[in-house]
Length: 415
Image 1 (spheres, rainbow, N blue to C red):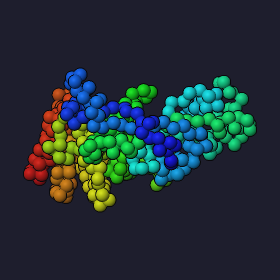
Image 2 (cartoon, rainbow, N blue to C red):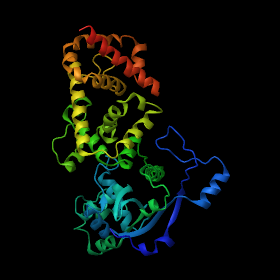
Image 3 (cartoon, rainbow, N blue to C red):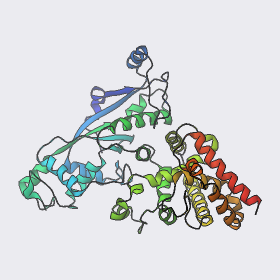
Image 4 (tube, helix red, strand yellow):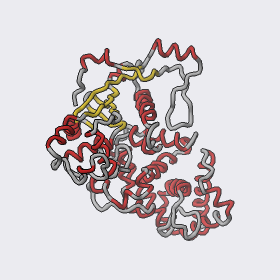
């Protein structure tokens, strides 16, 4: 996708914010947000401006947008990119009606990852709706002002109405790659600061993305894809009550009506559960809030290679399969007969199992002792409370993992 007016970049460039290495960052938020301590710091940052985010605004006719989206190497618009909940046909139809009535539509935001290659930061559903309607994939419905168009596809629109839609446009604000060139110390961490900061600000209106949805967008890459892959494993979906995947076709999976209704799937909660395992494996990484722990894990694995990714999948499956067997295919429960697994108990059991994976056959032989000790550790409301996850500081997380690890060790010793 070419950016109109690139030769006039300097005159059109805008400053969104400035980053200064001397400014301290706040902790325990989803991201390290720059915080100014004094007015002098603000003045210095604005004047010296060691880093300015550079963006450009462009208008695209709707048919042009369809062409751009279909160039899959140009725009990253994969369904898993932001969130899994999708617009209803009514919502899509109202957007098309807005274009026909010339009602202002909010701009989309793109991030230039490599020169002339873009990631959608905000506006995925608008782009998908335009492509789907121009491809005759849905019929207009629930229109109030243009009611006679209900039931029409793009191909069956009256000629003048179709021409009106063809002339409609959508604005795109592009955060340009030149922003990186303006950064004195353009490390990957500093570039991520830019992307995270802007992405967080873009999602302050409407229905905000949750923490994992933001991670999914900001830290897109092989590690993120690996997490999604693990969350598709039949054993994982069975344990967490997610409708299984019946096909390797991601489009079909994404459109699954049953899975779209599942809360864990809709919110990327399944991916966050997988991420928790990898984030908590190293005890020295458990510090700060759970959100900061998970963010750090995503960042540290940005450069994962194919071999490492495959090893993570194999390791996770081996640990999950063993834990599932030890607890008779109903793992991670806080009370006997409970239908819902506990995420905090999942943390403890999975990390303990991971630590003793090399002694898997011994764990299997001692599973009755492990189960007895497990339920003994949960035989009062006070004990259940300790594992419930309501107390979720780094020390609480470490304590639960330590308790479960000791329980496994004792069962093996007495086997």
